[in-house]
Image 1 (tube, rainbow, N blue to C red):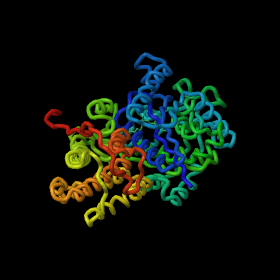
Image 2 (cartoon, rainbow, N blue to C red):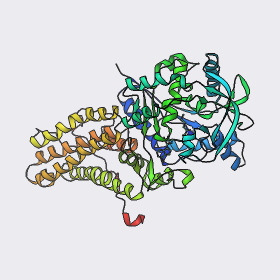
Image 3 (cartoon, helix red, strand yellow):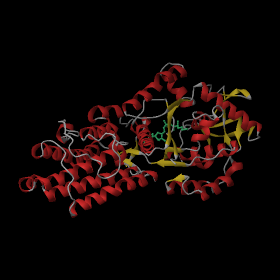
Image 4 (tube, helix red, strand yellow):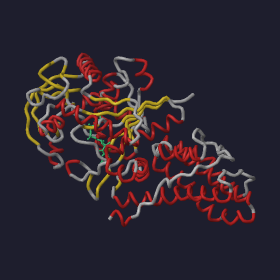
Length: 501
Ligand code: MSP
């Protein structure tokens, strides 16, 4: 029986157009979704945009637009970029959609009636930039901007009530918060007593939000609203069968939003009596030099520029292979070109060109017979035969970069094997032996293409079509001898550094 796989990205604020950081999480979710679909898993992939709250309201004001007009203008920039990046999401949620607002209000009402929401007057420090009340300690850290004292009546969610239960849950479920250092970070955070969460904003201060159903003077705090997207989109409260089919899911997030997911969201789910997410995986940041790539720092890389220069699949490949999942990575155009040239142009592209060139020259352009393997072929075959399983295990463990590297290791081994066997020389004395080498190399390319389909859907498909193997699988030997190779332009032309500088 196949498993199910429900994967989500954060819903992105629509205060500006998406950058590489946003594209990264979305491509990562796409790669995982594609892998799971290929395994036959019942897969659902959700992404979307976060449209309420102060940041969006301010961005709209700056542009002289109503918040809704601003959101309607910006949301398509995300959907159209995802389309360009080959993102295969099954749904795209906008938090201003009725289907979402209704569920947020239903949940607020439910939690209120259960006694987990109460009103109180509160005087405390508020960070306008972060849009939340902060503790004295946080204020002292100097990490919060635009801090002022605010005294106001608000609604609070009894987050503190669930602290012990949450600690126990995290301790009992090692795969729940990943990677491990993030799990430890959260357990450390939970050593301090949790405060309750302020989940309302008086309309007098902020009007752009979902109205609190039991007090129309208030709107919902943007995070309480946003986190609910993960269940409102899959039918919580409207389509029980769909909801049960997919929940709980896997949340991919950046490390900047770990607390909101592992503490706010989980305690909300406890209150609703729903299972917690299967996994919350926090990846690192893309840095530019020493600092995080972010709009406020003005150092963002626009995915569209990169796609235009190097093509979608090269961008997907670079982002997936360069960042070790869980750690920060540095984005530089030089790194991009270096990885592209070494992995795609040299290792993969050259092998394909070389093999097809030799098949053209010495074997009538027809994929030769596999022949009887010698020791050299057996070694490549052994590596190829376990590759699928190894890659699947790495993917199941969220090690996408390592999975890609495993595939490239086969390609590198085949490049060495080609050097050793020299089928261009062999062809002069023993044509079937030369054919055997070329069959083995071509089969390795086919297998690599099957496994790289999730990362580079277009290029991998082109390779498979060239080899007449577009619907082939992971078993070594599926490549058919006798297929005539078409002529094709180089798949990954080398990028010349001089031209870029
Ligand atoms: N709207 C909230 C999330 C709500 S989820 C219920 C939000 N949005 S955001 O637009 O700021 O996007 C945050 C996410 O974008 C990060 O968690 C991360 O996944 C991605 N990234 C944004 N900048 C990034 C980098 N520089 N590097 C890597 N990813 C980063 O927070």
